[in-house]
Structure formats: C-alpha cells, structure tokens
Image: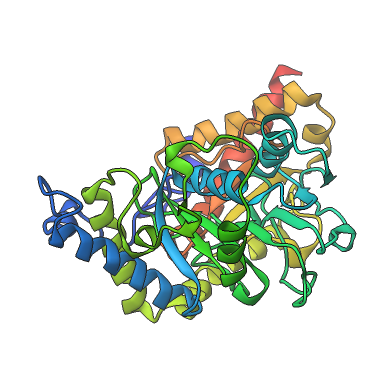
Length: 391
C-alpha cells in the first residue's frame, strides 16, 4: 500500500481516546472564562457552581428526586471505592466482572476488604457472565459498560425490583450515553472525563434512599479514611450532596463540567446524547458488516457498547499469530493512524486482547468516524503487506 492510496478525507478531530475523551464539539479555553479561580470552593460562588453541577446532573441523567448526588475525589475509582468501603460487609456480596476494571473491584473486595462471604462471577473479554447467577438477597457489584472490553449489560431486567441487597454499579462509560434504570440501582458512579469529555480527577456518587438507609444503620468493621467518610455521628453528611465536597475540588474542572452539561442540555438532554452515541456505533457496525477481517470483541450484538467500541482483527493470517504477534500487528495499525494524525489513542487497553478501541460517545462527531473507517482499511492493508514481506 503506497501513500497514493491513502484516503483523501481526514477526520476533522482525530481524538478517539476512551479516556480522557474528546471535548465537546466547538470547545475552547474560552469556555472556562467564568471559572471561580482563586476563590474558595466554600465561598458562595464556589458552592453555587458545585450545586449547579449536581442539579444539572440530576436533570440531564433523569435521576429521581429522592436520590442523593455527590461530587467526590479520585474520579470514578474513588467513587466506587468509597461506596464499597462504606456499604459492603453488612451481608454477602456477589461481584460480576468481565473486563479489567470489574476485575479490579473483585481484587479490592477479596484482597483489600477481605470479605469472607463474597462470590465472584467472571467472564472473558467479549462476553458477559451469567447474570442470572447473581443473588440479589446479597449486595451485587458490577460495571454497566465494560470500558476495556466494549461489552455492556443490555438492560436492567436481570435486577429484581424487590431485591434485599444493594446494587453498586460502576457506570463511568455508560452515564450520559445509555439509559440507566435508577429504580434498579442503589449506587451509581461515573467520572467527568468520559461521555461528556470533562476533565479528570473528580467522581460522581449517586445514592438511592436504600443506600442512605444502609449508611445510617451499618458501621463497617474496618477503619474508614477521611476521604471515604459519608456519615457523621451515624447520619448522612448531607453537605456532600449539596456541593460541600470532602476535599478541595478544582474549580477549573467544575467549570468545564458545567460547560459540558450546558452543551448536553442544549442538544436536548439524555435522549439526544444517547442518539449521538448510537449513531456513532452505527458507523462502525456498518463498517464491520462489510469488512471480513475485523469484528467486535463483544460476542452478542445486544451487548455492544455504544461508547467504548472494541474491535479485533479476524483475518486468518493475523489471528494465526501468537499473542505477541497479534499485539504487534494491532499496535502497528494504531501507530500508522496516529502517525498520519487521523486517530489518536485507539489501541486496545493493555490488559485486553489485541485490537482497536474507538470512543464513540456523544462528544465524537459521526462525520469523523465516517472519515476514519477508510483509514483503518488503509492501515490494515499497509500492516498486512508488511507481514507478508516479513514472511
């Protein structure tokens, strides 16, 4: 494949990273001009901006009025850890995992919290575990959308409405792109740097009334770091859910999140965001359908992520390589695209099978994905030609 055969059209924005993700269309530093810089987050201006971030989150995600929403430290990871350390241990727990971040929660529960009554149900990359095995008389921890595998739960039908335990859901690459049934979820977490393309380091923690009841009636057996404390004297620390953060937030990041929320509201809210992500996924689905040498890592179509799309090369020569060879081939494809400036950061996650991972959340333009697909064909053919020469 020569330079003369390169596609003529290039994506206007080559940023397809799965996190931090692309900023909203039209974003510039001017969007941050009203940030409350040099001011205390506890001053009225800081509190008002933090409270507005919570209110807009509730409005756009359609979070029930009786659920609490808090801004917490350390991104989605911090929010999930805070929930697990504060809520687990009152009863047995089932953990569902099918990719690296879900596997991380398994490790934390078994080796850090060292819970004795813990069961794990795991599946390899590309598949879901048998969701019917989860016992909802126990607490259940799971990711809604596997960011590193491109596999999501299709819906919340596997969760009973009359469950006795709590459901703790890591929804970081699902929030603002997939419909979350809050009546089935007691804890929902996500970070700003995913679907809305915000800046990193801040997490969101959403609690149902049932989760609040657990917090106020159960005291874990282990010491609780200050950064995880959600209660004081046996009562929920309500201030956290009104913008009084546990530690100092970046008001620059808060302003950026407010800008992203304003953009989302202007589009038409959650339904519009989901429609954009679905349309983006549709571009890749059409490409895969007509291309014999590539496929989704997700085995079942109904489990395909519409944000973090993971692809594997199914060409017999490539699939016949050993793991190192497949990884080198996929890296070569991703590197060629990055060198051309048409796609940045689309290699598969380091623990995942070799392939590509393309972010298709709402901040990505469909036209950019349409322009990218011929470039993937070009890069594949180029790498395949190199493979034959080496042979």
